[in-house]
Length: 312
Image (cartoon, rainbow, N blue to C red):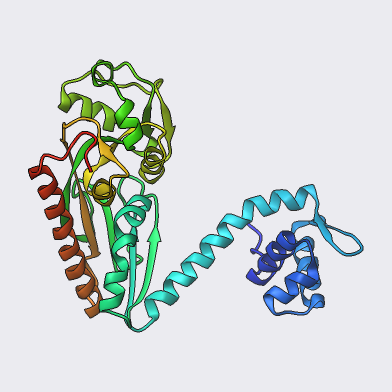
């Protein structure tokens, strides 16, 4: 039969003492006495059945057992703290909790969010960037914004826009890219995105050019990292056009080819279908759709002007 879990007080005392290498500093951080910290550690060591710290004159050091236990518990402790802060945020007046992907948060939402805050200064806003698994989000939060193909159960869904794929790079990389060899698949200046490994194949098929395989170029974890790497001159990346609208307008990223390929995916707004919509949520959704309209108009105007290879 599993043993009862240690108290949260013991775990917090253990984590702080391990991080600060001091019971007294941990006591100051947690607003406790050093004696209370020492007692919590002793209780935890009794429960574990071995020493977690070596006591030295002015410091404490983790034992091998302590390092193992810290590695196994610190992630769970952070998740509990995050869950608590999320629930606290939901309980505030005019609270708005938005979940989205790191790329949408970094490249689209945050550059525009001050305009919402100016319109709603009393809003208590929490933005959580999470790597969704197969586009699945739990119901914690007021709204979620993610990519997919409208596959979410338990949510009201609104499509914000379709995703078109474009091949982009920094102006310097675009200028030195020889289009002929590039279209023949002869370049290693390629950035692949681990979370979207099919994007190059999809774009190449739509553009009618040979595919670039994973043994060519660099693989980065998510789109936010890939776009940042492209801006810094690491190579050519397949980007979701709307996500880099600001970079295209500013000229930090430019198209290396005119092909714009529909991905079959879209960005969607998700709301739990069992929850009444709050006033602040309604205001955020209206603002979001207005800002999306501005992005779409900007991209359409850019296309109408024929701005493509190497043009800002």
